[in-house]
Amino acid sequence: MDKIVIIDDEQFVRKGIIALVDWDKINYQVVGEASNGEDALDLILQKEPDVVLTDIRMPVYDGLKLIQYVKESVQKVPKFIILSGYNDFKYAQRAVRLGVNDFILKPVDREELEQTLLKLSPLIEQERVDEQANRRYINLELFQRIIAEREQPSVDELARLITQSNQLVCYVIIDIRDFVITEPFDKQINKALATFSGDPNIFVHAFEREGFGLILQQQHFSQHLNELSWFLLRMKNYIEQEIGKNVFVFAGEVGRGLNGIRDSYRTALVASKRRYSQLDDTPLMFNNHLASCEQEQKQLDPTLMQALLEKIEENEPEAIIAIIDQWVYEIQELGAPIDAIKLSVFQLERELKTTMQRVSEQGDSLEIIGSIIEAFNEKKTLKAFKENLTAYALEAGKVLCRLNKEKYNGEIYKVKRYINNYYHENLTLKKMANRFFMNPVYLGQLFKKTYGVYFKDYLLQVRIEKAKQILRQTDMRIYQVAEAVGFGSPDYFVTQFEKIEGSTPSKYRQGIIN
Image (cartoon, rainbow, N blue to C red; front, side, top):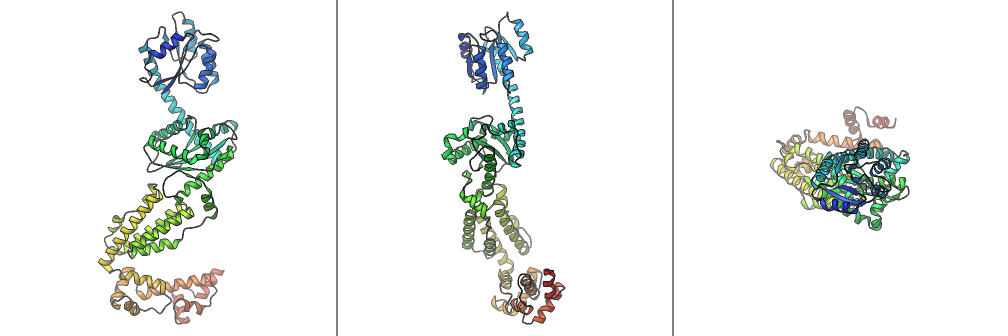
């Protein structure tokens, strides 16, 4: 609603105007009244109305002086409507020069007053929109320069960030889920935050593509300082109700003054980055656990994803679920950054799709399982992501199982895995065929068809790669390296190594050292 104050030295005129108009119908709210210019100025400074309806002739100082003093005292000048009599023509001329918006003759006609106010409403709204757009631009520039880049602000800039230099502050990130911000939506979120906080000037700025940053000051949450998490939950629920979208809320540690804002911003970023330290979308405040995770920087165990891939390929549902449970538990314990989680999942998906492309002649299986990476774009909770990943992995296992049965009976993949694990043993095609109950000739053909390389050549490749790793990482002698990777003869090892790598093992090691 637009706000209006009514100024007239006669009480029955003021009360009559208040009773005359259906204020709700025209979307106005009377926020105060005064009987003289001095009291009116105090009222206007306090209430910041959109419209002032004022008589000209009043005690202390008249309506025209009031308009002049208001213009000298406030940044946002309200619209002025003059109540005048027939003998006030000279006053009216001066009023025009002062930029008065309209005149209404006494006695006041209800329809005339309502129509005058309704004509002003679009002007007020446009000014409000322009002011908010300008404020958003200024706020974003101040945030980047003073908070993110830590430049020293001027006195006026600091006042825009924080009303009192040493009061308690908390920086909050609001991350909109499943949505790209548009300008009208931008207005919605600003309005919701202003209404909830009771502060139309609350510092809000756009944050990355789908979020907002805001500075909560002591007056916003003073009654809830010991229950800030409860306050943030109420704020989250209110925002979601107003904009019709789900949001994540991340809060930094509470501090004081400008340095407190900067530290709170830094720690809010940590909370956002490590949002999967919890399963749901309850507002996440920077805490000791997150501080410890950020300091230790522990990495996710890569062997879990490799184990998951193997169990998917082997289509073992119980093992798949158990590994995902263990992985999600590790994510929470380590407060793993969302980018690290995304990288692990991307590698899993890439490996799975590579396997499926190799197995499936038609390639339509890729469409069946879809992409788990999309879950990150949809900004799901860890709980929802876990459910998606489990469903994805189980479905991928079923698809691979079907393809394996249809085409290769699944055994050829176990052969390859056995070579990768036991390359140092005396492996032959005949021995592998006996182990996996296959005909040696069929196994050789199947291996070549599946992987594009003969069994013997693949075994040699694996052994040479393992030998290179040992040469890089140890000082073992050449004959020891040969024995470690499954060569019975050091001379044969050297010959095959030089044939594949173009240099002897000794020269390969020397090249790394030099």
